Image (cartoon, rainbow, N blue to C red; front, side):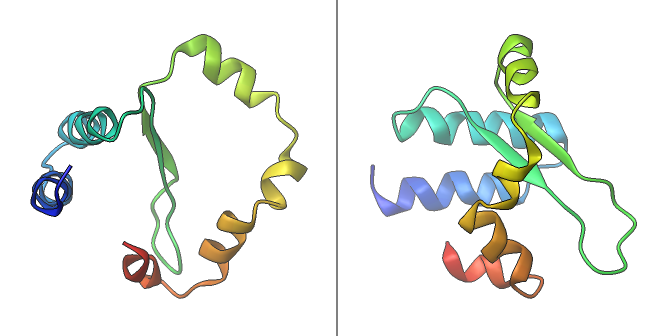
Length: 95
């Protein structure tokens, strides 16, 4: 896949008007890079009064199984730790 295709899909995701539009774009990108499933977690930071939510294409059975993973495992995840420690908007530098 070339960079122009990735930019097109990323731009569509950034401009998505609804959650369903964002899910469709994420699903297209996931398929283009050769994967079957995706999950995108969104978290508010600072004084924002938004609640965390996810978009994904996993089955309810998979989600139920994942919900049984102990929270301590997530707390030790180095990627989540780096995201949590970075200032708002810093993640954009990783793309």
